[in-house]
Image 1 (tube, rainbow, N blue to C red):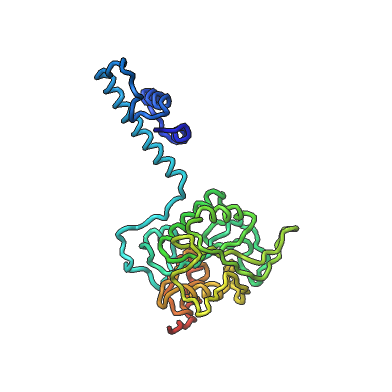
Image 2: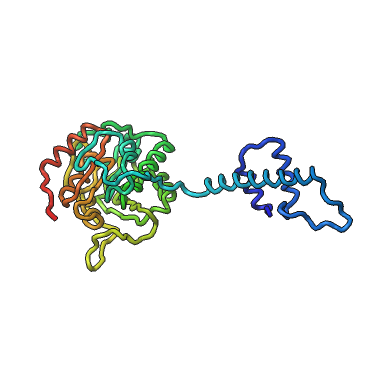
Amino acid sequence: MISDTSYDAFVKVRPKISKSQEAVLAVIRSHPEGLTSSPAASPASPPPKPDEEKERAMTQRARTQTLTIGVKRFAKQSNPSPIPRRAGKNKNMNLPINQIINADCLEVLKTFPDKSVDLVITSPPYNMGNKSLGYHPNSSTGDNFYDEYEDDIPIEKYEQFLIDIITNCIRVSKYTFWNMQSLANNKDTIINLQYHFRDNLKDIFIWNKHAVSQISKGVMAKGWEYVFIFGEDSTIDFKENNFPENNYVPNRQTWYKSESIPEHHATFPMELPRYFIQNFARPNGIILDPFLGSGTTAIAAKMEGRNYIGIEISEKYCQIARERLKSVTPKLL
């Protein structure tokens, strides 16, 4: 039996059909009690003719096929997109361990097997439209924050860009720590990302920092940033962890940047990646940063005795990161 409600929902999503199929649907619509059984016939009713039986069977088949297509399409549109899987890939393939790759991060991520790294810790471009983020001492970049990336793309394109990256980060890692600051050009995107990945958002960490004065009059100084924590599900417990005996690992910390990189001032403090590595990465695990920038995540991984993989589209930033890594002594675990 097909109800009025399910029929109406089906009509909205059904594929285009021919006039003959329209006629079939008209028959279905006129029989809300269903076509699987005919109404009880009175004793005087003559038996159906062979042609009528054939037509009725064809009608039932057409109804079943078109309704099945419609329901499948409706379900596909109603559910959030699943995280893709790379079945058959070997987790132990030759990953670029302790290397910095100068490339487009999405193209590189697509080649990584599922769950091939422990953590992703990163901060994407904010799509600021090449506007100032406020006062930054020792900066040599002005408002041009990124060497090889235009930080001013249409909001729909920017949002899809982030969705594609996060989807792959969740696929390749146990946990993804995604740092973003809510600003004029990306605050709607931040809200949309939380909804899009609602089945993978395990927690939200708050990084309290120095509030930076804004250039525009009437805009409040920004004194905190998000770190969204994504995983395989939306439960708030982390099965993979290095928590202390007292289980006290707050989802809020205050850190101030003590190091300034003149060529790349859109960085987070060293304490941020070290905190997540200490509490969530296994010994000798792999830490990935697809937007490596000047190399802070890779340096933190090396400091904590873990392996790193950095991906960065700017060769200039790759060279800065490699130079910074040279002076780091790995921690022995």
